[in-house]
Length: 112
Image (cartoon, rainbow, N blue to C red):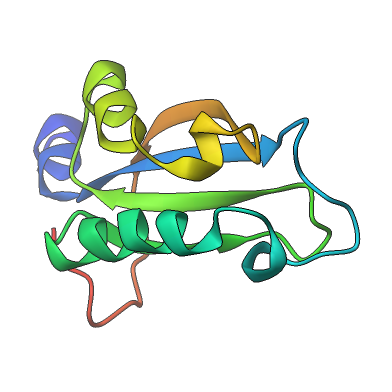
């Protein structure tokens, strides 16, 4: 099998990295930040739509990561998070969006 054929069989995810923004309050976890309820509603919506595979904050409070299903363009990702109160209000800053070729996937509940 050619390398191209193997690559086509691998699922692709979109990794979204957030850093703590200027409004992040140190010493508080994500759930204790301002605008938590609105942020949670955005995350719940992405999950219900099958777009969010995994996500959560980093233990050191430096930011968070979301893994989205499929290959999404930057504009599409920015639209998905455009109304997220954590981004709108500076709790998080969208740091990086990267396509990820998944070589190993042990998350049984995730779909390609």
